[in-house]
Picture (cartoon, rainbow, N blue to C red):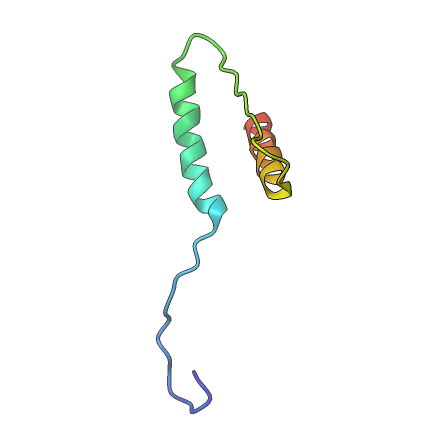
Length: 66
């Protein structure tokens, strides 16, 4: 409800990234299970942007965990 006591309809839906990632990771895992060799992921940073480094770190962490 808003300040006037009138019900306000929801304007958006919260979707957690983990919910989307779970399905995508399962799909990738299934696809990889049919391969006869282990893949290697290589990444290159184009600059020294701290946000790019953080993204690369999180991507590496996900690959290691999954």
